[in-house]
Length: 436
Ligand SMILES: [Fe+2]
Image 1: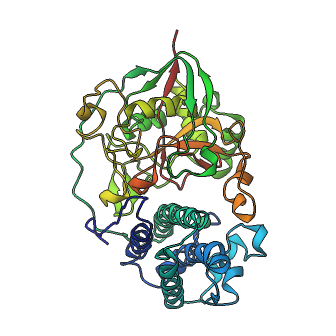
Image 2 (image 1 turned 135 degrees about the vertical axis):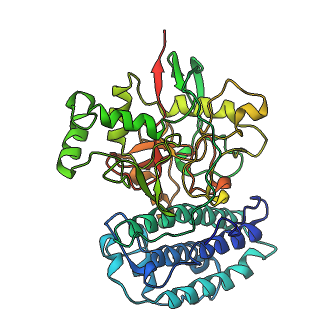
Image 3 (image 1 turned 90 degrees about the vertical axis):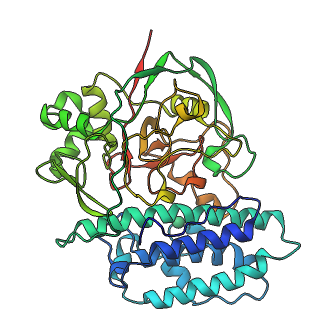
């Protein structure tokens, strides 16, 4: 695949075009993958490419076609078992850690499954009397598929990383022209802030309801921590000095032998990317660090991670335009598929020079906030209520999207979440500080 691969971002008010564009983007992402590439599960958190292709189709079959398309015949009686991810309310499922054991159904079979679902979805999408509740479920299915586009890229990167041939998913892209920027700290809003989605347009349930909280005096870094800065942390013994680490973090790095970000070479001068092994760019944001590493780095740097309310308050100020989606940022749509050093675009280009850059895109930013429900949160009734709410334990919130996130998928209120030891997602670090 190349950077020029067509990607289809469309407005939410044109549901058939949105559905068809997003479905096509998913298959486009697999254009240069062989059938063998699409079968591997390189660790328990990774799903094979073909599982993503099937599971996203199952979502539409299970939650939209089966209940809302009269006379719909399922493509295969056992696919519900194979491709249900975690929805206990709709039945038993194949083990998450055993997804890489399936040579059947083949990639071709799953391609036929996608076509079957798409064909039946067209009639529903174009029905003049489509109930709003069904349209809302379809919209949810498209956002779900965009989440899996990112997962597919995260996962194939890991799959290729464990192969001694170090395959490249795509050709190296032209080196970014980002500038070396000093890190400064920008004062955030102090006082009452409003967090969460306002209910106008799509959001996931975990972004609701909108609510108020109080922000103490604080400041936030003008850009993410870059590779050169993280290298200094390593060289000053960051991974050998327990004073920087949470207890769980210290035991994790010792048990797993971690002494650098995932994908960095032994010599700390190169990193594995979706374009194969590439020289480490000192000015690009550090990526593929766990929460524990982000937190330890922040302590070493005399700072801390932002809370999600602080992050969202700053992000709202930097958003421009009425869409609610960021105008600037390195997203999946750029085709670069790797964090870039900060470029010329950003809030400054919109006449907002005093705002941070790269809040959106490049790397997800760990926050110090545990993933919990907002006050008044109510998951939807039925199995679809399992989408987010039941994961609100033992995970940390990340904000802002990454270079593998579709641009029209992200917004200021978007909450991603991972366990604190996870680092195969494109996660980086933005620092914050308490101020007087
Ligand atoms: Fe899913």
